[in-house]
Length: 373
Image (cartoon, rainbow, N blue to C red):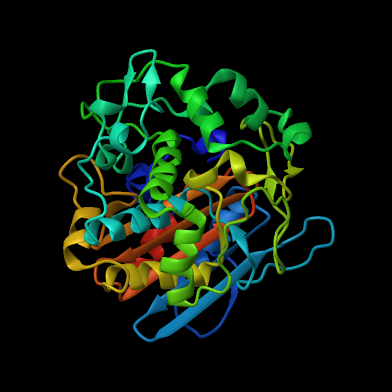
């Protein structure tokens, strides 16, 4: 969700990342067990090469789990990172939102081929935008053509430059974010192609409310968090603080700058249903495993979620690795945090990584190391 990650679209974006460098020794990460040596090395290499404060990971395989932590949670005190920390997960939120829209589809309360206009009359309108020509499915697979509100120059100035430091506690209502998007013409005609837009999932969150009569936060709590016992997962709304334990989050804001600023506290309402959530690496690995094992969606809806008939799934992406393994999941960036959560199709091998430096881009070596190493 941060500026340098605004066009990222889940695991599919990792396909262009560089391969793991060979022939270099790195210190081992802190973690349980003797396994996952390649993953430990890839984490340590990423922290060293990109000068990240730290990184944590949790892997769930079969009935077992493994976790590791590298680097520091606080660059001032030198406090070490811990895999038990709460983290901001940015756009990984989208996979949760898509799940709670697919559940009422199974209940026959909504059809993914319904128009946006049916559920949000008059909301997607103006400057060539037409909600009657866009389906709910096109929101979830990013083929709607709706402009992404965070690309608006005036809003981007407040969110992604040093101005953020004086606007970090500002509240943004979903309707405000949609209005920003509607002040721009569509990027392309609905269904014409794929282009990632955070506005799609702000609209999806509003549709959840129309369909269920409850906020998307309440529905995620009721339909996912409580049934799976994800005790480290929450939707903070406008609350700026982080639950303990947590690391400090660091950002370079302008992207090219090397100056790191502490962005731990922020009002995540600018991300809303496109990126506000807090979780843990263990909860994310458990969530994806449960999703793929059919604990959250019936087979028909899961098949729709994972459909790649267009350019991607619904709130989820996939990538085939060098060893032939295909992984599914999403990445997410928000000020001071980059998260990657992914799983195999059978849910038997899930992994989640997070770094508290939001300039991290080269995720591919981590994935190759864990699923191919």
